Length: 105
Image (tube, rainbow, N blue to C red; front, side):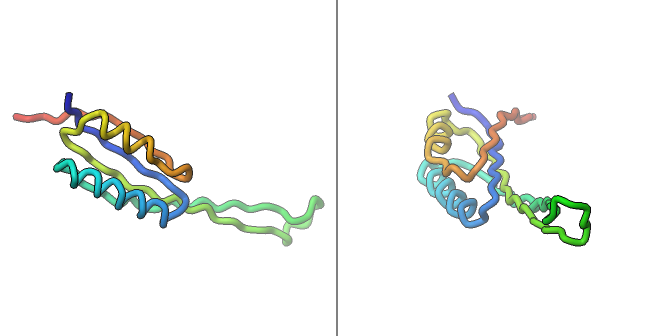
């Protein structure tokens, strides 16, 4: 049975995200599937920690956490290909899969 999926790929490492994107593109092209990749904006989160356990507000450390994400829209894909994509996922990636319906009128 064929389905339509939206796959959101999130990572804090842009290189791993790029390599996994190339891996998925190769799989989808070999299976002659229609897909569309959308680069989503990166999200920055700023963390501030005090160096001292006392009241010294001037002694702070700032850290920035950047998350990169892509959205992949796949049409008419078999569930076995989705399973293969999930099984070969690196540990630094987070995958969010949503099934969607298309209105053909």
